[in-house]
Image (cartoon, rainbow, N blue to C red; front, top):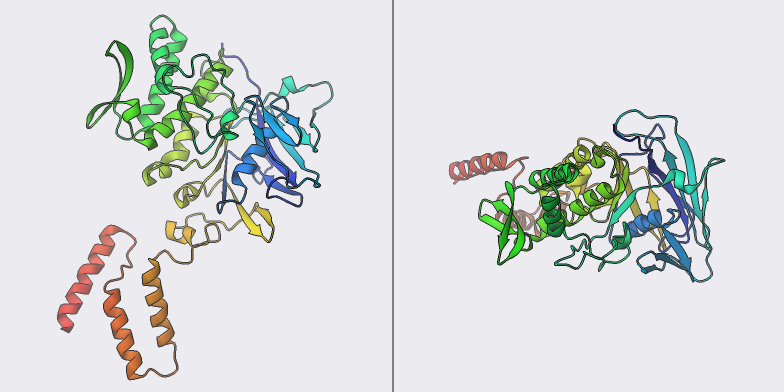
Length: 421
């Protein structure tokens, strides 16, 4: 019988005088009902504190870190300088909900808090409880997401959130983990299930991989991936493939380790923080990533940073947060413009990304110049000549919404040119 597991998810993060965040403000992680959002996508220009928010979430997990001379010290002996200034008093507070479920029945929930006020992390629990009653299975990944290779991870104790504080902290060796699971699966039913689940993730995640094979090459066991170009070793897969494999296999392995008595650890409660989740992903992957992760990890709360309008388009029903520079501070906008059902070009030119035009800059300058001339009260012969030159340089400007429509529009324009010539 499957063991009942209680959950704990983030509801909000409040911070003051932490890195680029000055005055006290809140990152809201709930929906309109006050329940934790399944997905939160944090947007903003480079240098607006997206990674700082993820690190702040990890830093207030009781028992996760310690404070040392104004630095957050993780268990991997990595230090994070969270201070905004020597004379400013930093404040970070997290609110969590206990016993909530994204998948299945939700029982009576409780709210807990964890507060850091510059000296120590102070958890606040319901009377009669301790932190052990509200363990938060939180796992995070930096933009680097480096995979361990060849024996480097065998004797290493994996720290769930260390990579978020150090780009050089390696994740689990996916090949080594698969080889071990393949070996243990022969006699151990549990590991056979683990292996099958991870293989399912890989085969459904990597578009051109149709099969995973385990072979001995040069007297060494090796995992090979069957593609349309033949069998390919892990190290010869594309960087995008390896990056996805690195954190996906690491996350799955963490859940297997965290929930050894569960019939399906991937369905158990977890919080996943990913910095630049869209990194190295082809647009096709970006369009399907959210649905893919929701299906494989149905009880996981996802909090990620991104720069992709494609990801925003697919997450428009979830929680979008925009970080905006205002003078010397960064402001957390928890209620940016709604882009539900918007096209990609509309999202790009919205306040979420602030791009003024989706056309090439040279083309837009010519269009602006033509508009300026046409807006004059009187059009001279010189103006007409200039407009004619602009239109010749512009040649053809597509207005269709798809490649087929653009092609049809181009043919129509060619016919009109022949008629008018």
